[in-house]
Each structure stands twice: as C-alpha cells, then as structure tokens.
Image (cartoon, rainbow, N blue to C red; front, side):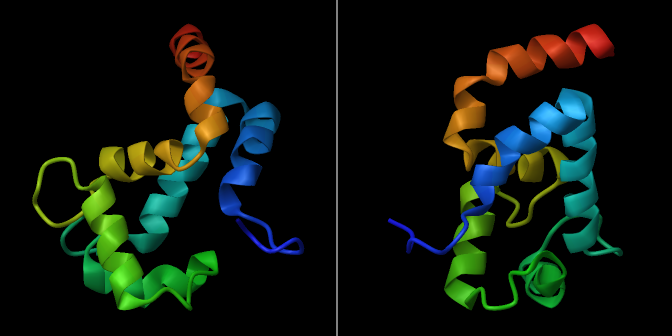
Length: 112
C-alpha cells in the first residue's frame, strides 16, 4: 500500500484517457516510449532506461527495478521493450484501464 501522501502513476491513466481519448492517450504512451528508447537500437534497453528514466521522474529506480520492468514487459524475449511491448506494459500497470480496455479498443477502432 502506498503512503497516504504519495501518488501512484497508474492513478492518472484513467483521467488521461478521459481527457485525451483513447487515441490521444496512446500517443502520449508512445511519447513516453520515445523518451526512454535507445536511439540507435529503436528499443528500450536496460542502459537507455537507466539513462533516461529521470525524464519521467524515475531517477531513483534501482537496477533491479529496471531489470524487472524490462522482464515484465518483454513479450518476445529479446531483453528489450519495443513500442508495442512498452505500451502494453503501461496498460497492464493500470488495473482500472484493464477493466475498461474493451471500451478503449472500440473507441480507438471507431476513431481510426
């Protein structure tokens, strides 16, 4: 359980979707990916995550936490996160968004 005065980032995701819509929210997730990506490799690596994490306020993330994040999101087993894996991981970290994911999918398809 988080301390009373702390804010957990997934608390903001439903509000972001409400404000930006599904398409706008996905664009913001993609912007987050671009902040963390290794420019030469086109994926988020351990090194790029550690180097760029302060841009997202995650400068205190331990090496173990970074490794766990990569493992959690690495669906293809290459040791890095591509854009789809990163966005999927971010959605999975927000239980409320997961519960309303069908609504988001329908909205995204309608607006496509």
